[in-house]
Image (tube, rainbow, N blue to C red; front, side, top):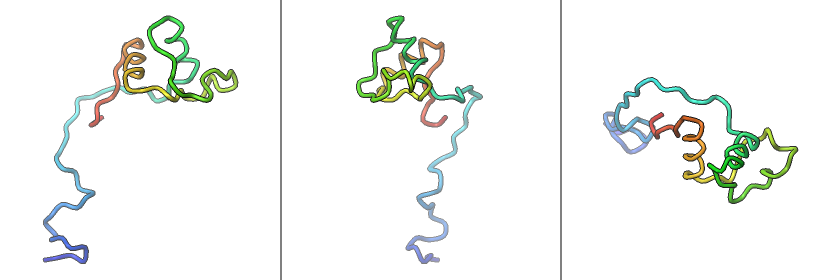
Length: 90
């Protein structure tokens, strides 16, 4: 039977998961990394400064989420914090 959307009822929609994913328990930080937190990593020489960030050097925004970091910079920060980036499934 065709629905009004042009697919049969037994075909998955775009909103259906492609497959079931089972995850082991994991812990994830609930707060975003702030400019102040990221700057500490830069100051000890582990992380590099964000490439593009309007607020990174502004003291008014030291508690704002850091921006302008790429995947490699985020990975370096996570490793420095004894953590890791979440996987796509997480």
